[in-house]
Length: 231
Image 1 (cartoon, rainbow, N blue to C red):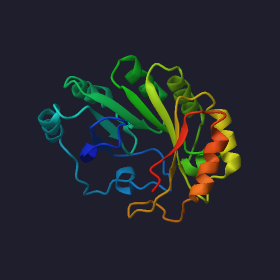
Image 2: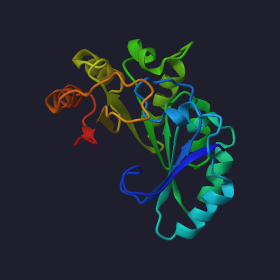
Image 3: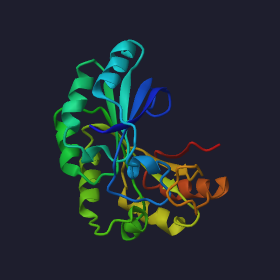
Image 4: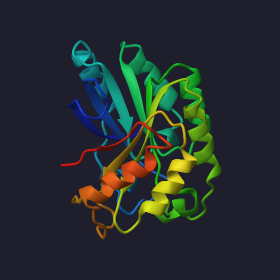
C-alpha cells in the first residue's frame, strides 16, 4: 500500500465515529477541482508512510478509535488493499472506504469478505456529463453503474456524494442525477472549496440558496439528501 497521508484523529471523515484517516497515493481520475493534487499525481520525492508507522499508531490508539477511513487518491487501485484492511480489522476497528467506484470487482470483494463497514462513493456528474469531471482518456460509465448497483443492494452502509461547482452543475443536472440514483440510502451535496492543492483552480461555489434548491430537486428521488460541509 502506498499511504501518503495520515490524519491521526478525525470526527468528520467517518460519520458518527472517531477515526484515523489514511490517504492512498494515485488515482485514475483527473478531476480538475480535486484538492489532493499530490495524492493524485505524487511528486518523485513524495513521503510515504511505512506499514510499521501506520500500525504503530493504530495499535497505540485503538482503544479510543472506532475505525479507520481509507481515502485517496483512489484506494481500490491497490491490489493489496484487502490484505491491508484485514490487518486493520484484526485490531477490532471499523473500516470506511472512500471510492470513485471505478473498480466494482474490488468493491464486491471487500463487501463480501466483510472487510469494510461503510462506503462513501463519489458521484461526479450526471451520466452524460460524467467524464467532463473525471477527465479520463477513455471512459466507460459501466463500472460506475456496477458499483452503484452493488451499494444499492443494501448489504453495507453507504452514501453517495457530489462536489458541486457553479461552472459544472445546474438544476437540470440535479434532476438527472436524482433519476439515476433514485432510492439511494443517502446523498450529500458538498460545495466546492478553494485550496492550495486544487489541480485546476478555476471553479467557484454556488450560493447557499442555489444549493438548497438542488436539495429540493433531489429529495423526491432520494429523501435523505442534504448539504454537507457548508460554512
